[in-house]
Image (cartoon, rainbow, N blue to C red; front, side, top):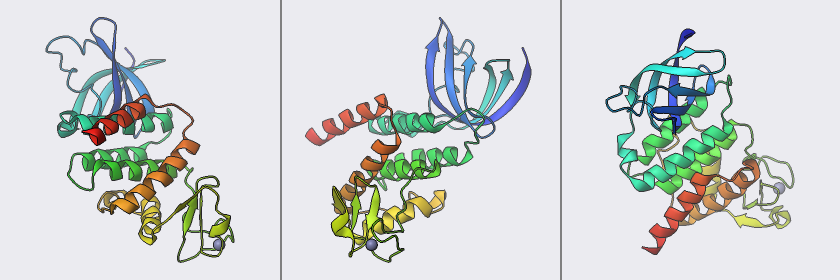
Length: 254
Ligand SMILES: [Zn+2]
């Protein structure tokens, strides 16, 4: 059967395989993103049933074969049950997991991404700061962690670190100071607290990342900035994002 190895991490997705099995994608501290089989996980009373579904977090003991992993048992420390019973939160969580899957690589240390995803899922389960803000914070920080975030501290026009910025260009993906803001094309005018929020999102410790709220005006500006940055960084159509946006439209029209 091969060697037994233990990893800590989260199930990003699970799909049925064959008659009774499941294949899961795990984001782990030790091995990065890996896929593993859970034999018999869809049989009634299998001990693997509850521990091999999306968003469970814990340690997984696995047989390591030459080309694949097979889950032997798991110790789950968080099932995120309050998320899976809330349709809105599930839509966000699926999208967060798909984005983590997009950036995850086998044998690439995923500790920071796991901590970020874990904190974002915990924030979804709470009334504040609100799912939409959690989404923009998660998107921007994840893209930043993977080295693709713009610099929110330096003006793209004069290349100077300024204390205040007035706009964000969706074309150059940079911030502009008062003197240079006329050069910003396709610009989003930024409220000072939106600028501060963007700077906070890319620098704050993860445990403090979801501990603030913003007003509606700042939320709209974050939405535009995060959307432009994501479309530039992520060149993949995410099914879960389409589902999430569909769900958001239903919520708006209700
Ligand atoms: Zn400038």
